[in-house]
Structures are given as C-alpha cells and as structure tokens.
Amino acid sequence: WWRELQLATNLKFARDRLMDNYLWAVGVIFNPPFSVCRKGLTKVACLITAIDDVYDVYGTLDELELFSEVVE
Image (cartoon, rainbow, N blue to C red; front, side, top):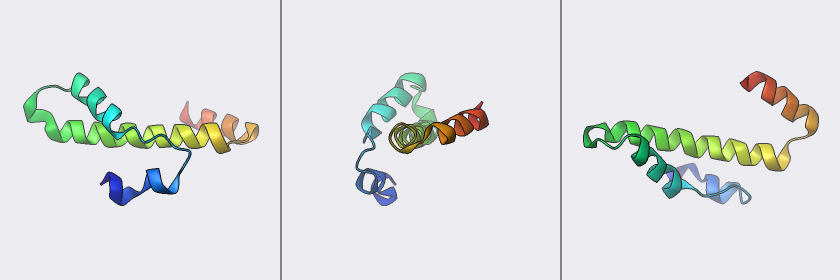
C-alpha cells in the first residue's frame, strides 16, 4: 500500500518513515491478535507525517493559521 500510494516518490521533501511508524505502532499495540490494528495505525501515522511535511514546507502563514484552527 505504501508503494502504491507513492507519497515518497511524489513528495520528494516528505520523510519516508514507514518503518519508524510501524515500530511505533508495535510499541503501542504489541499483542499478536491486533496486527490489523497495527497496520491501520501505521497508515494513519504515515499520512499524518506527510501532512506535517506539507504543512512545514508549503504553507503560508495565513493557510497554516486556518489549518491549525480547523485541526483544533
């Protein structure tokens, strides 16, 4: 799913942190029966990382303030 999404290819500035996010998910949800949950948490963490990178690189001050208000 990560290669098919092509975030690392299309967003050259974005961090490719798939393994870091998966290991974080393993630390949070370590029981073997919850593998589907770990995969889902990894996907969410990867997308949040990509959004954070877009936020840091491309956002203007007005856009970032508006985005921050929406998230809050």
